[in-house]
Image (cartoon, rainbow, N blue to C red; front, side, top):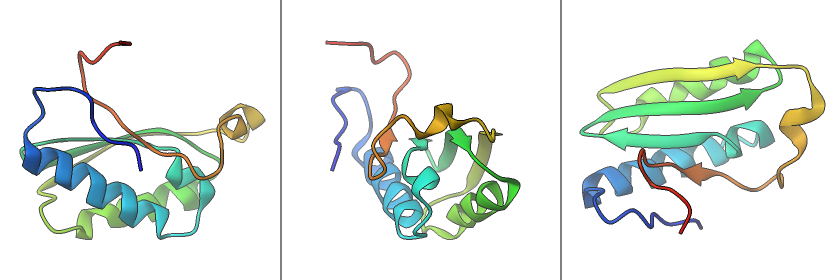
Length: 101
């Protein structure tokens, strides 16, 4: 599983990001595994692309994860095959300001 390398992320935020990412992976929709998950004090931002509005709607169930106070949906729907370039099982936990090391 990917882990955060950004040193300024609160452990509770990192834990929430992981729980949301695992929840999305458990939906058995490959596109949801590729979404970026970012959490700050109970606000979760989902970013990335899915192939249908149905997949986007499924991602909204992440609101049910314990600790999510607010869910911001920054997911684009694209029928383009460009979203399929990443490995099917990959998801990421993103942190603003975290650049390449």
